[in-house]
Image (cartoon, rainbow, N blue to C red):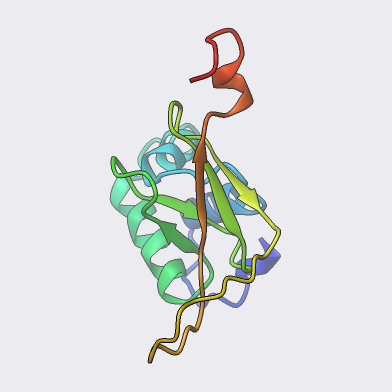
Length: 132
């Protein structure tokens, strides 16, 4: 919660619950995932509250919206530079903290940031199903 103390958001009990859920969360949840968990404590909370809070945090640079999963946006509270490993079966996303230096061809682009996505089969999905 300390991470979000300077977010300048109006801290309603519902928003505090959303921020608590995000704090240190490495599961890369969707808005619907967050809503499902937080709505158990605040049944009158709307999905719009979750989306509005996520949008506000993203706009302030305190959250990263991932569009890795084409079915739904996922959110990453870890804003430090890192990459992701994505299971193509269950859509689990794991952080890869190793930074890679990529040599790009000569270009007129000034690269300001990069993000590498690695796709594969996680150990849980490959266990008992045979590797593909």
